[in-house]
Figure 1 (tube, rainbow, N blue to C red):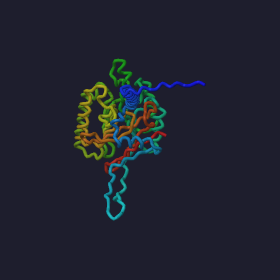
Figure 2 (figure 1 turned 60 degrees about the horizontal axis):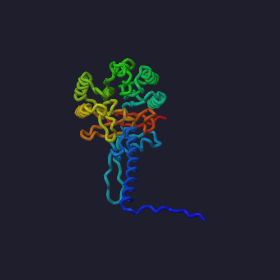
Figure 3 (figure 1 turned 45 degrees about the vertical axis):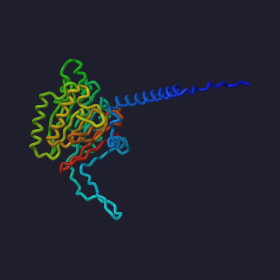
Figure 4 (figure 1 turned 90 degrees about the vertical axis):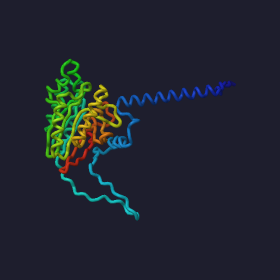
Length: 331
């Protein structure tokens, strides 16, 4: 009774091409928006993410809580005749000590406390904190984090993060005023067994490492080169380099990229074993492309703005100077 009248689509070639291009443009804009949002949220550029980093991401979110990276894995050589490659037997290494590294709790102190309890159960000798214990760096926030560290009963050494400087900077005073008042010095060094630890404060996104600290650092690195340490670690807040994240030293103030490169060369020349950093809320291990200096970024304890589950790291140091880095998820 009633007939539907269908309007025949235009078969004009120019119109068809225009419609196709418009569809592709809209799709590209959608994909671009998702990519940009993810990059800004996570600090990672998926385009730059190499397969090794992707593998670390998948492993770090797997059900197993620990990701162990031994320093001296032996690669077996292939054999003919259908036999299987066999690893050479190695003598068990004797553990010297363990320590834990925490970063980026952002006032989520319950997660910080849970991490400290887990670290205590692992019988770590001490804790190193790599900054951003707060959201805006007010004194009360810093004191709350310090109380958790104090109550753990474990020795701790800390350096600030950029968030820990905000309140002081906004008041027009020394950006580290609140941090220094609560925690004391923002950089230091110490030794345990034959391992040397240098904790750098590069938390200021605008000024970087000032001349006073740089002079101190040069002296520490000179003693490091002249010493007999078999493990040499540098700890700081902001990564000096990263293969797939833009959250590195110099992102806010571009001139600090030159200082970051200078620090990398200094550490390499001093024989530093590895540089550990926080800030990017992501666990990765990699080598700096130019110098091949080993680097690790510690995952964040905070649950917010975190593409991984809350986590920290435990490093086991052996008598021969080798070490394992364990990426540990907070339970």
